[in-house]
Length: 281
Image 1 (cartoon, rainbow, N blue to C red):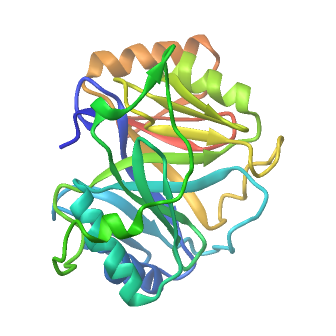
Image 2 (cartoon, helix red, strand yellow):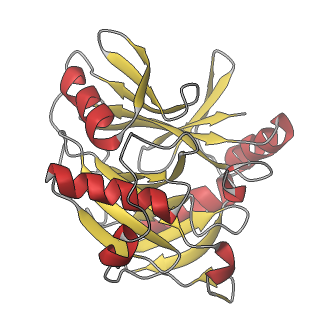
């Protein structure tokens, strides 16, 4: 497991995505992405890579509407594969299916991008070794350059059989309406550190990761929160190492005036753009 996705760090554990057609969406996430179904009901499916840990939950609201454009919400969630060889297998799978995708080298990682049938963004990536990341003045060097697809394909000729059991939710990237307010919420409230900037975007992490959370205003400054029944992000979880760490963050959220509510023993907040976060242990 990635050292950046276990204690003492705080990291994204699971995302809940609203979709228009649960059958169509779950079929895509099984056959195209490689998840297994952990639980399934009429309007909800819980997806896993290892057969026990939920990574993505799909929900079909009764009054769901298509994804609303030019709003805050999900840009993409990012599935972290254990190795470059695993990315090689997944890349070959995409090429064989003919499904449309994008690709990029970010220096710290190599990534593939695609959308689900509802337009929800997905990144599938692997990290380069952390000792090869370049840091200067507390910021990590990241960019978007051409991916070495041939080099990745040469890593493995194994047959694709779905996601490896050690697959994790690597990070989440969100649209917000006000970059400064959102960055303040994630740093002063949730305790993340800003580790990189990009035009109209900021990248945040704990424990020296290149990013567990990214925020951007690429949908426009002042982009509104989407309707509650719109396709897109319903919530995501941040996993804390213990109750003390979470209690400290709850206090910080209170100090900055951020909303916090408790439901069935679980604490829930949302960023200034309305992105809902469940704070779990």
